[in-house]
Length: 283
Image (cartoon, rainbow, N blue to C red):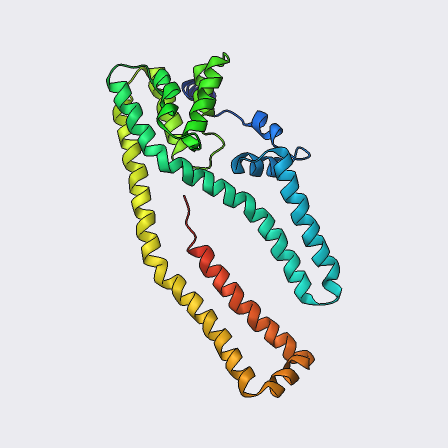
C-alpha cells in the first residue's frame, strides 16, 4: 500500500508538472544579464528595477563609497555611523523604488490590456496574436507596451508560445501577473475560453486599486499627525533655545546632554520613518 501511494503521488506530481509546463520558468538568463559578480540577490534587484548591469553597479558603488566614508569617520562621532547606515539604506531603496514605479506604471494600463484582449478573443482572434499586437494601443513609454514588444520579439525569434507567455512581465513585481500567465497557459493548453477569465482578472485589479485608494485616504490623517508631532518637537526646541540660549549651549557641551539630545532626535526621526513605512503604498 505504501508503494502504491508513493507511485500515485509521483504520477500526480508528473501530471501537474506537465499541465503547468512552461509556467514556472527560471529567470537565470535574465538574472545573468543584469547581475553583478553573479550574486543572485543583486541580480534580482537589477531585473526587477529594470536597470542594466552598468547602471546598477554605478548606484551600488556610489552608495557604498558614501557609506564607507561615513563609516570611516565614525570614530569622530556616532552620528557618522548613523549616516553610513542611512546611505546604505538609501542605496538599496533606489532599487526597490524603481521596481515599485515599474509595477505601478504597468498596473496603470494593465486593466486596459485585459479588456482589449478579452474583446479581441471574443471576436475570434487567436489570444497569442491578440497579445502580440495589443502593445500598439499604448504609449511608447508604457510598461505594457514594452512587455508586449518583448513578447512579440520572443515569438518572432522562434521561442515556443508556452515559454514566451511564461516570460511575459516576468521581471515586473506585480501580484496579478502570475494569475494572468497561468490563466493564459491553461487556456491555451486545455482550449477553454479566455475572455471571461480576463474580465475576472480585470475586476480583481480594479478592486485592488480601489482598496489602495481607500487606504491612502484613511491613513492620510495619521501621516499628517506624525509630521505634526515632529514639527512640535522642533518648535519646542526653538522656543527653549530662544528663551535661554546659554542653558542650551551648556546642555550641548555636556557629554551626557549631547547624547540625550541625539537619542531624542533619533527617536523622533525613527518614529516618523516607521509611520511612513507602515503607510507606504504597495502594489
